[in-house]
Length: 384
Image (cartoon, rainbow, N blue to C red; front, side):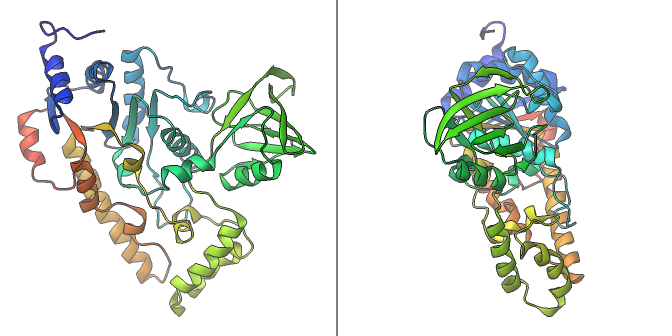
C-alpha cells in the first residue's frame, strides 16, 4: 500500500518528517496496537528504516508482532512452539523480551526467553530487520557486544574446514545440550565423525559428517524417523543463550567471586555457588553472575546503529522503568543486608542517565493515544 497525500495526509506528514531527520515525531489519537501497527507498517515501507518498537512489557510483544504481520502481509508469525523452526537469518520482524525472573532470587531465566533473546541478538549482529519489538526492560538490559554474539553461533558449509571438536565446544558454550539421540531444538549428539545438531534456525535437525576437519556432508533429517529429507550446502547454527559459558569460565568465576565477595559474612552463600563452579558446572541464577568473567559491555543500542525508535505510550514506559529501577535497587540492598551475594544493578542494566543519553542520539516516534494531554503529563518523567 502506498502513501497518498490527499487520502492519508497524516501518514505523509510523518513520512516527510522522518525523511527530514526530525528528532522526535509525535503521533496521537491511535487507541489500539492494530491501528498503530498499520501506520508504522506504511511508514516503514516508505522509509526503509529499521523500526524499533518499545513496548511497555513482554505481554505486548506478541500483539505487536501479530498486528505488524497482518498489515505487512509478508512475514509469517508463528506460535512460540513453531517459532524455533525459522530457517533464515534475514528475519524481517523480531522480538526481544526481557528476563522476567527476579535477578536477585537465585533463579535462572526461563529457557524459552533465553532462546528467543539469543536468536534475536544473533540475527541483529548480522542483519538489520524491518521491525524489532522490545520490552522496556530489554532496552536497559546489558548484554554482550555484537561481535561476541555473532561468534557464539557458526555458519557451516559443505567441503569447508571446521574442526568437530571446535564445533562441540561452541555448542556447549552457547547452551546446547548433548542428547543421544537428539529430540528437540537446542540439542546435539555425537557418533564418531558425525554430529547431529538442531538449531533454532532450522525446521528440522541436520547431520554433519566430517572427514577429518572437513565437512563432507550436511543433511536435514527427521528427528523421529532418522530418515534424510534433503542435502544442504550450508547451515547456520544459532546460539541458545546470549552468554557464553564453558567449564573454564565457571572455574574462573569461582576465583573472581572469592575476590569480589571476600567478606566472611558472604561465605555461606558464596559456597552455595562455588561448590558447583569449582567443578566447571553452572548453578541456579549463574546468568546474573557470569559477567564477572565475561563483562556485559553492550546493550541493544549497540546492535542498531541506524534505527528509528518508536516509544509506545511513553508515560507507561516511563513508569515501568522508574518502578523497575526502584525495585532492583531495593532488592539489591535487601540481599546484601541478608549476607547474600549479587552484582550491583549498574553492572547488569543501563542507568536512567545512560538510557537518556543513548535515546538522545536516536530519531524517535512517540505514540500516544490521548494526544496533547498525555504529552504534557509525560514531561513529569525523566527516564526516557
